Length: 267
Image (cartoon, rainbow, N blue to C red; front, side, top):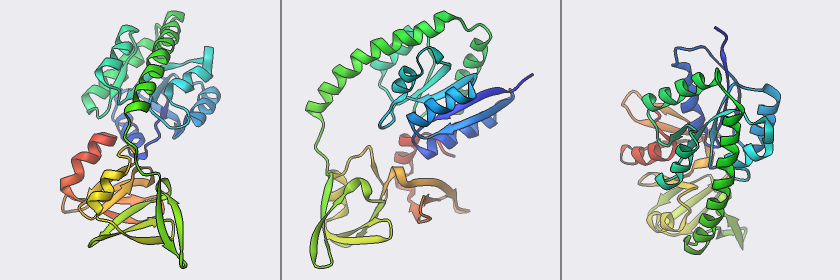
């Protein structure tokens, strides 16, 4: 039996590793031909590798999963959507008979989606591609309406923070902050090799930061989710968060579930 050629697409490193680990546990032979962190990478990889099946994250910055399929046009492969959409939006997938994984998903749900996707490969028809196109058209209208509502209702989170540097006041983009640590009634912002101390309680700052980007992982630590490279288990049962620059942060047990809810089960 030839191996199923798979592409994995997700902008969150932990979520990608979760899918890869579950693929390794499948009884059927699997060859992961590409792992992508952006929509642009996905389009290029799918065109080059011609995979049998794609695990495609719906919500990604710059180009989301639907944008990937729109760019592919008639080259749309068999797809299992990975999404955090609410139940209302998920009905669209069900109506068009397309499989999806709702974050956070467990191993049993993943296996069912995988087996369904594998079995459909043998009887894939033009109708399946048409269902994906119909889904794109439907969700395009729904997404536009939803974005208009969100634009009105969305809280205004901090995009810039003023810091003192070299005797001057400078503006630092919150998106450039790697992690934040509490120091009494102050917090220290870490960005690259630089750090800035500002007078702000960590609980107050947490409320002003975009929860889609930042997550509190300890009573004294907030991390930019995009900077997380991996989790390392400790003999005690705790975890250490390893950032892309090598920084190690402790993941408190009290905040472990919040991280699991954001990126899926990791243990």
